[in-house]
Image (cartoon, rainbow, N blue to C red; front, side, top):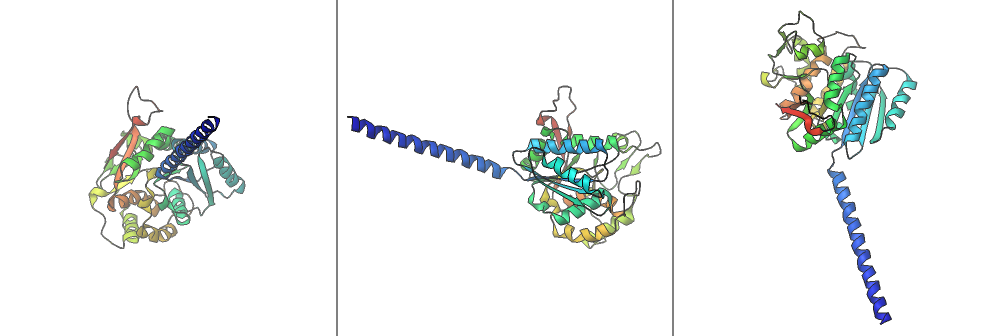
Length: 323
């Protein structure tokens, strides 16, 4: 009897061990599957000033992106400030953020403001490997900058909403802040509008064209990218004013775009000159989202819903519109 009981007990233990091992393996497979399904996310940050307040806002934005995601986030930072001590600070500061797996810091040529830095970053990295990329920079106009950051990464759930939107809307290629994402070649803006308030327009800025002020630069950049003098259809012209946006990496990972980057960079403004309009960097503020649309992707914008009960911790209170 004792032998029979011992045999039965050992058999039971074997079944329990097998079941436990299988449950553990299944859980591991589910975790791995969930991890593999989670999109790869990156932040591309362009630094042009050592202002501590602005750095604090950049750090908060990146922290929110890292908190929002089940998979770790890669951060690519570029700076034109020739200060190795500051460069080391950026690296250490971002490496300490929970959820950030890789930090790459580059000291780049001071050419073309944030767009020039971004293009140099693209040449040194593989943006096509990311399903969601956030491009931000240290814009010095406070109200404009803070509105963009609040719209795109103001909380972890705001960032989460953007990342998930790419997953649930595979046709969407780029997402800009509401109001600052404008469409059509004949679009205008006027003093007193929220768009003008963000850009700090003056009383003389009435019925001003968004696209048509610097046609020589727009035409030149378009020809460099497409080898064509024929500009795109008026209805797909798009601008994300301020150059902060979420983008699907594949949208910018095109041969046509990468082939044109060196020429575009070489013709951008040396150093940062405030108010120097009509240059390739300003044209590309318009052409990046327009190229995305030309390639068949949809553009969206995002903003917090206007609601007295809206909670900043609830991703469902982020509103998207597609165009």
